[in-house]
Length: 164
Image (tube, rainbow, N blue to C red; front, top):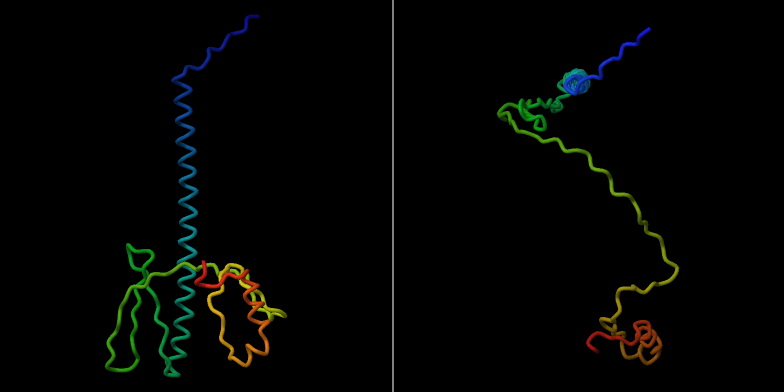
């Protein structure tokens, strides 16, 4: 028996199939992205309809109580981040007002890292290396208790504002 030798595929054939596989892969990825976008759009429309329905129910109840109704925001075509709002007053003589609103993304809160607590003793500020002023406490206090000012100057290593 004689085995037939298969001829190796040509480089043109390999390149053809590589291009074919790559284009099919890209088409499938694009189809998946398109389906995900359509799903998100469908959910947005469904949620918007629910919000519209609930708002209508609230507005009907509020009209009976003579409360200003909630105005719905309509998306502006061509500007997905701008919404057109119309404010209509239930009182006669007030014209309708129309404006465009831009929705802002939520911002993460600043973490609470510090809290206030009562101190049991006084602390000297570390970055204050020069004593700016010596408080005047009256002649009679100075004569009775000179240790306060001496301790104050000693805490600042004798550096008083104005002395080099």
